[in-house]
Length: 425
Image (cartoon, rainbow, N blue to C red; front, side, top):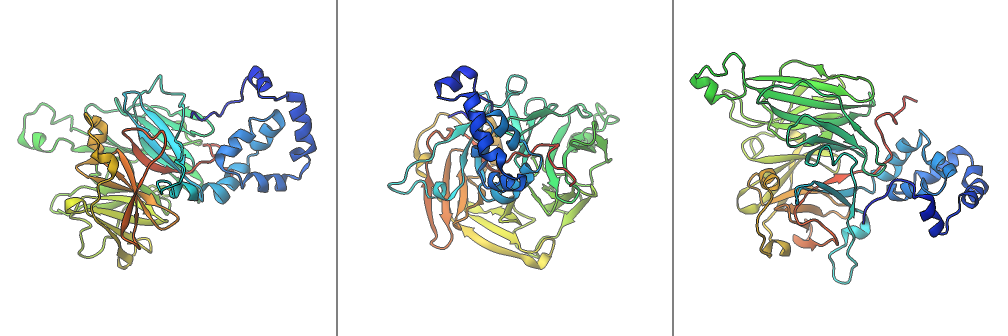
């Protein structure tokens, strides 16, 4: 099932029983006759899939669906409560994006007698120019995507409305390693893309010194692009941390968060934030003792709180949650999840795509999100999904019709938002 966000052709509308004049007349006798605030109240309660179909009915309804106040109203009322699970798949070589709703009925899928939910597919307009890409981040219904081959091209894309924009090129360095971040700050109401480039010191290149070979990346630069406001990237100078080479894990309190590698004379791994308002890096306080800082872990926002997923031995997970942001004493070990083998993993496969294998980093499972029913959604070896009930201590496999064979899943809020849709009023 491919998601359609363009009006059907006139011939198809006639075949479906549609008539432009009749639809326009019915619309004017109904929705168009209502006050604007009532129309906004009605439309803001609809899920994004229904809103997109609403805008395809006729011209007048399309105009109602393009009210500049609707994206914020729908995002606040409906989108955050009914998110989607998006699958990013690069098998076969041409990347694909597909989705399924994470609503109450979908959370119960996999139970005996329940109907399997169907996975829909997006059709990104940039696939011809950028067939392979990495997902930098998801924020307020927008995706930031980077070319996974050359790391030079960036797109911002709303998969439900089809809006897409290629971002201006940034400064490039020879043999650079790039870390990206993407987020929105609610106070400044600005979307920003962060690029941190690490590259060899040109003065030491080819010098043959032991230090040059032992420390391959000794120079760095932080670049920031404010979407909708600035036509060019701004340089913030050198990066104060050696951040792990992966996209930003999560946005909490208007800050992007990464895991930074050990520094000289400091062996512990650090939690690093970048404030999207004042554009400053800060270290987030870690709990005294515990595994955070000396183990391999993943950052995420779990029910609005900054959380660290610690990967222990034999496939066991620990989820640490910071109940009050940047208060060291508020860190608590909320969940302990044991090892599990979904049925889908027992099937023989030929090979795993390199990108999927690399993203796993030796991990068997990965926490995707917390579900409304209290369960934890887990992804296993980029091939299977399972839900863990912490109250009962039990797992259940999740089976979806049309789910890709190999994927990286993440939560995405479906909305009408666009770069220029957040007005100051």
